[in-house]
Length: 399
Image (cartoon, rainbow, N blue to C red; front, side, top):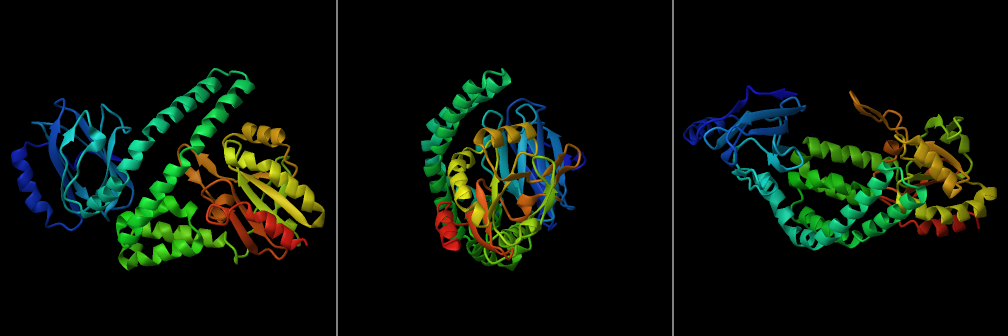
């Protein structure tokens, strides 16, 4: 929702008066500063309000200054941007119940310095540790953007499949070059987690590393957050992710699901009890998934008559044609289903039938191996072992 009543555009002389009031209200914040740019520019501030719902406030710059005030239920990630620049050019900041200050330059919004928030200072500390890596990565990012734009353009112009596939392979190859940089980003982030175990920034950033962590590692990070941070919305989100990852990790009983397969026939995981079942979470657009299909086909042929089944769970709910085309092109002989994530423009995402959500899947490819009794005995990929370990596990199971 959007409101104007909590927004004030004042001269600098009036900002001080409000600041002395704000500090007496524990749930109240103020964000103010000078503005370098056109007069009457509209500034927007998006943040979670008292009820937890996203609130969009705005104000008009007057006398080269701006001021926002409002109420927060907790310190939260928020976004400050100009109407003329759009949300793409924004300041990401942790808004907290304090007097905060940020001088804005209309031509350099993303590099705005925000003061008055301890959590924001911690966030900037993490960001600063990554600046060197980010700088080194810029040439690669430019190459990837150019290649990806060429691929998107080929699809928009409906060029031949051969040309589209060729451009996609080039894009995928460049994308793989990001891996060493991502590892360095992760190392810097984990170092921050260890140094600031109870920080709200740790809880916020931890969400993005769920797919890389095993359940025991995620639990250690969660435990170190401490009760105060655990009770925040970010802490509760981590606990939810921990529970889902646990349900999709070795030692848990596999959760049943009922859906329809690629031929529109009903299928249930319980139908396969008594066999070893590999849930293969993949997508038509996932390069590493498609690259691993030939070897998985070899394993399937080798063990299918010994009690081994594969169920492909595709993240292609929004593009059935691409899903069916990929299954046909790769010659996948096992049963295929969609993950079941629904989306409505008005209501948003509906995970009520989402198979991936049942197993805490956040990255592709991820594979879950289930024994004949319905217990998960291995996880490969996101939050688990390397995919290559599947070979030895199957060999051991069927020897």
